[in-house]
Every structure is written in C-alpha cells, then in structure tokens.
Image 1 (cartoon, helix red, strand yellow):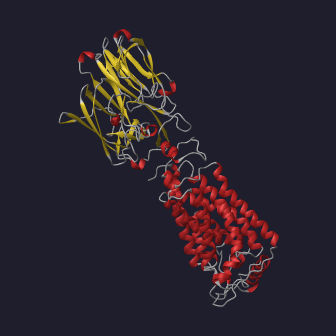
Image 2 (tube, one colour):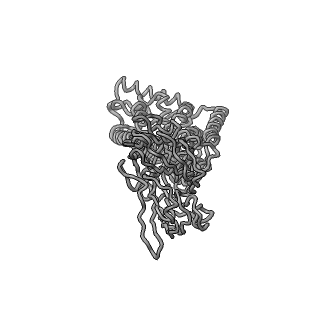
Length: 637
C-alpha cells in the first residue's frame, strides 16, 4: 500500500531500474564483447542502482561501434568503473542478502551491520572474485582467493563505509518501514546505500587498477575481430595495449582477446604498488569503515531491530537519539492506514447511545475497538482507534443502581483495557493494565461487570498505553441518571461535549502529545472540527445543560460560552449543592475533568461555545468561516 509520497517515487524508481536492467542485460548478451562475469556485474549493479547503473554502462562500457570496445574502455576512469562494478556486484549482493536475513531474524542494527559486512566481503571474495573470475585470472581457486584478498578488502571497506551510515540513518529515521524487507522503502534504502558505497569505493578502485592490483574492464571475443583492420584498428589496439601496460592490466591482447581455455595463464597483473602505499590505503579504508559503522551510534539507537520497531512511522520533529527506546517509538508512531477496517464519511456521528440486552437482570453492552478512517472535516480524515466505529465512542447511558456488563473485544493491532473514569467499583474492574488485570490482547475479549452506585457525567477510556490509544480516539461518554429523578439538575436541552486533539501530517495520523513532534494541529468536539460541528438549536428562555468532558489527553481547554454566564451545577460527576453553585463564563477543562453547566438563552442570535485558546479554534493553524477546531454554535430563535 502506498501511504507516503516517497512510495510513489520508489515505484517510479524501481520501474526505471527494471527497464534499465532489462536493457543492459539484453545489450550485454547481444552486442557487448566482454566476459560473462562482467556482463552479470553490470546487470546486478544496474538492478541495484537503477538508471545510474545504465548511465555507467553506456558511458564506460557499452561498445559504441563494432570493434571499438578495447579502445573505448581504455581510459583509466572507465577501468576504475569496471573494477568498482566487480566490487559492488559481489559485495552488495552479499550485503543485501544478509540484510534480509538479519531483519527477518530480528537482529539488532549494530549486529546487522557486522553480519552484512562479513557476508558482503565473503560473497565478493569467495564467489564473485575468486570463483566467477577464475577462468580469467588463471591459477587455482585458492591462489585467486589469496591474490584477491587485499584489493577486495580495501574495496569492500570503502564500499561499506558508504553504505553503513546510509542504511543506519535511513532505516532508523522517521519512516522505519525501511527496516522491513517486505516494504518497498527497504529496497529504496538498499539502492541508495549501494549508490553511496559505489561512490566512496570508486576512487580507491581507480588507484587499485592503476597500480595493477585489480582488474578493470575487459574484452572477450570468440574470434578475431576482422572488422578492426588497417591503421585505425591498429591504432585502437595500440592504445589499448598502452593502457594495459600503464595500468598493469593485461586483460586485452592487442585488441583481439580470444576466449581462454583450461590451463590458460589468464589475465596476469603486475603491480607496481609499494608496501607503504598499500598499507596506507588499507589503513585509510579501515578508518573510513570504522567511521561509517560506528559514528551513527552517536545519534541512533542501534540496539533496536526491525522486530522491535515493527515498521512504524515517526512524527516530524520528534527527537530520536541513541537513548530512545522502541516503546517510545511505537507509542508515538502513526496509526497504520493499512489496518483500517472501515471508513466513515462526514455525516457519520459519534456518541450514539449504545444499545444493550438484558441477561438475568444485567444490562449487557458490547464494545469493540478497531482502526477506522473518520472525517473530522470535509477534506480531512484521521486514521483513528474507535469504539464500535464511532468517535467519540458510543454513549453508555444507564441508571443509578443498574447492574451492567460490558464485553470488550479487542480489534486493535495492540493491547488495550477500559477504565471507567471516576466510578466506585471492584478493583479488578478498574482497568489499569498489568496492575488490576492483564491487558486485553488483539482478538481477546474481557468482561467488565459492576453496579452503578453513583450518578452524573463520567466517561470511559483505555488504561493500556492511553497516551497513544486514547489520543487516537478511544473514549466515550458514560451518563448515569439518578435513581431519584429529583436529584437530576433539569434543563430543556442536554448536550455532551467531548474534547480531543489530533496530529495529522502528510496523510498520516499520529497520537498528539505535549512533547517534541507530538503537538496537535486539529481539534474536535464530538469527533468533528468547526465548521463541521453540530449546531445546537434553542429558543429564547430555554435552558441548556452542557456536559463538558475532558476526554482529551494532553491539554487544558478553557471552555467559554458567549451570551452570558452559565451556572456550574456539577463537577467530576458530583452534583454541587444549590448553595455552592456559582456563575462563570469559562471553565478550565483538563484531561479527565467534567463540568455540568446550565446556560440560559437570554437573547436570539448565534452564540458560541469554544475553547478560549485561539490556536485551538483553528484547523491546521487556519480559520475557516470564522474559526475552527473547538467551536460549536448555539442558534437561538
């Protein structure tokens, strides 16, 4: 599923990579006169590097006209390309295979890098260099291992020095799908890593070819090339031979290299590199490797594995350092849009009264949290965690003295519980995960049963990772009517307001939190942002009971009503005695708090209920039709 802009780019990139690889493969076997190992080298590198591999092939190796391959590939920079191709084709193949295996096994990133290095070096040395090039190098397999060890070691060090930091920073960056081999982004990071590795290894390979320590590009023809005759052909052969002599590369026999048979001496190389030179470049390669492998640990937690983080995507601006644990990353990660089980348009409403059935005198309710897509504005959706497909969750409306049972079936990708905020009940029914109960794992059902001994305005929410799961939408009103109707503070209209903050960026929904990277940019009342919130319709002289519920997670909202003061009649579910009630026009509703207030419609007009923090009455920092976010209109006629 394509869920980020980078995904679309990667689809295009890999489409080009496949097309480029097909062209290189077809042209190599149809037109280009070089050994099979080099054909496959360019094919693999083009597969890994996409159009850049095709560019290298065309500029450095593709025979421009029949009989000119020897002269065309003669320049040292092209020979360096060929030498680097040897390295990348073998080493990168080993690295990529190891990366897939280590990610699947769940090895930590630091160990992953070590295994990748060893696998890349082993595959490049023992398979691609010593085995696949044996017929060209001559001698026994183990002689070739010995001869190839040092140049392969130097080349591999520089290549891994380029690949390691790219893989570390991108895999452990915001979008950790890059750690999962099943994700397109993983292969995108591998491709970019190979490009970085090729770039860093190229200068060393130019030197290795120039000093006769590695092979560059070679020409192999099945028979004498009759087309290359006369002065021009002789000149090409002479130029190629000069290059071979100058670089110590003897893979071209006067422009007419023939296919070697068994017992051939192969492509002999005679190095003029001194021991101090080789030692210096070897030491430089080790320093580069150490920096590439170790330096990222100053900024990244390389003890984590793909299994630890699970391909999550972090919010922009979140501080992630070497001490950031996997739990923090998972809690702040975006809701996965691929797990959405249902989508709801703007007309869908939350806080609908939850039906029940009666079993042996017990009112039985069913709650099922799951991942949904929910419209908070006409053009803004959130991927949310919701009870029964509603935000807010359905209203549980019962009477004081009722015996209730709520069966909670977890349809989320993570554990959950339910806490009945403010209720007096048996401890094992209270809901804190791992304290009063084991968490409800995905697919499991847990039953809460209690008798409602109180009355008033309450709510329910998770008490397993509430900073994540409640912020993503798990909350709902619990309204308990008094056993004695006379205990109810009466009003002509009764309206519940449940507050929430949201963080939506680049089409993904993150749990909003008061910390770096978690600050909200949308705000909702009953699951909608103004101007998509409901309008309350009243007549002059009527009264409105507003039940403010702090279902929000991380911020205090000073809730204000225009058109005159209201009377505060209840707080946190407890009715205030008539003598203690007071008038106000603003109450600070913090997370978990509840206020019941009664407002009288004194004059006709459109009167606002809103948060008095102006930023909270915007939508992504912008006002729409006079406001946004936490605003509701009371239309009085």
